[in-house]
Length: 271
Ligand code: PLP
Picture 1 (spheres, helix red, strand yellow):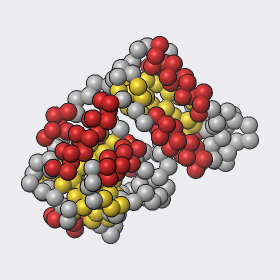
Picture 2 (cartoon, rainbow, N blue to C red):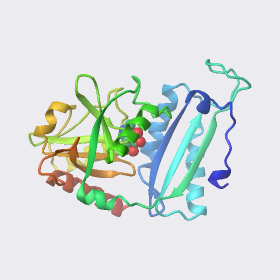
Picture 3 (cartoon, rainbow, N blue to C red):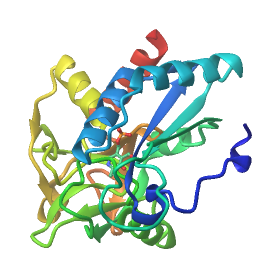
Picture 4 (cartoon, protein in one colour):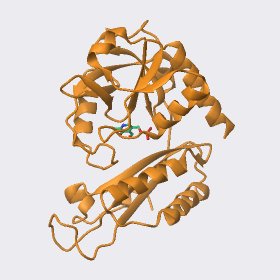
């Protein structure tokens, strides 16, 4: 049905409590990219919040059917599973309740290519999130507020940092930096979302013989960082050229970022 006609019950726990998890997947030329990896992360998120939805194989088929039937080419798949609706509002899991499956596929007009070429500006922002950021839950208010702060500062993204200056990731992206010739990104702890694009970029970097280490960058490292970039399902690999108005490296996308962008593009084209 048309997306604007979809209705969710007011007592749905996703709506009332944020009791739900989600995924966003990119479709290139009619094919969902890294679909199995996204479904595996969805399974982990469901298990982490003890949401007893098990029909991931059925979901996979239904999504593929929609893409085929409506001949989507360049698109985004959004999937959300909530714990469902009960007859009244109370915090504990209801005894008998059916999870709610919601997904849509939407044409994607990629207007980020100029930014992938020229790089973007970002701001830093305190990380106001909880202690299980590895779960892709729909509780995104801290992410929303950080993204809005970036928008109001004329920046593309907000890099989230802890009180000790540890840089973790963006409001909707993972973050990589090149320091002393090494490609660094935060390790997969409960403090970050294990980005699917992050994992792919780590793989591509190793294949390219680039020295890689899963180690956090700090705010204090930024003046020494030679390159910095964001990764994400729709962002792909986005060079950062300024943080809080300070120039990064030479103020333009660096050579390692470029090599990884090319490797990413080749992989997508080979599919
Ligand atoms: N980090 C956060 C907080 C995110 O919300 C996202 C994507 O939504 C990412 C990183 C990037 O993850 P992926 O590469 O799986 O899109």
